Length: 340
Image 1: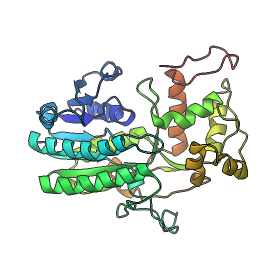
Image 2 (image 1 turned 180 degrees about the vertical axis):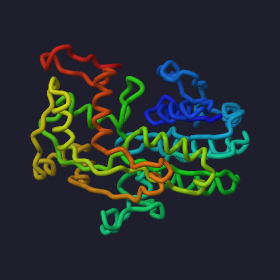
Image 3 (image 1 turned 90 degrees about the vertical axis):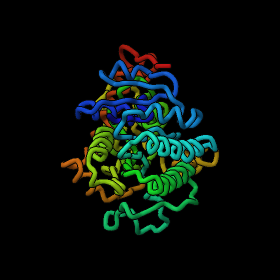
């Protein structure tokens, strides 16, 4: 049996889905409401447990009878990480690992991020000729508090897993796209949602490395079942994608939506960054390209990773289908209502 933390989350739900299809019994944790994930995934057992505020004994009880653990629950705020979120990443992960050891869990897969790998100030790293590898670590002092939280949490997890005698593998996705299982708005939907709704007057040439959620989920499940992956950091980062190119592709795929494809000049974006915190945060990503060595993940999966544009278009299609995006009145027939 596999325990999946944060099973109602974007990645957690897909990990549970792949595990169930693989023949594993799956128990998932939620902090409050299930958001309907137990209706979407037949056979899923759900337990309510707060990883930060509930006692360690309650976590041990939640893991009772589980051989494997996929610790997926972690904040992805899309901006600065608050002190409470940082505490969740550090203390929550430590508590989960201690509970896993006490419950007799044999193998752990921890969801980390490329943010814990690709933060080097060496401009020659992360290029096509010198991609980031599993040997790379981001520095613990960076402008991105999210990257700092992922780096610190992962380092602490490796140290603790070693002391507890737990076999552990970490999965490092880039910006995760792909189909949603639930009509929710995780941070990963923000880009496609803003493009679809035409909420920006023009589109910035923001670049990011994108991966497919189904590759990420399958990597979790295959890693937890394969003891040879113990001690490995597996990178799932399929390739680079410009927001401007994505806007054009989404407009071609969904012509009834008010999608804008005009490009914001860099100078205008730079000036806007003085007045808008979000613009200031993404300005360093202008036409950015980051390259990672994903050979270990592709070997584990037995195939190449899903192309980034394909994953991004799947996400756009699913947020329309599930009513996550809202089409303004007059922008085509049958406006889609916003989910609360």
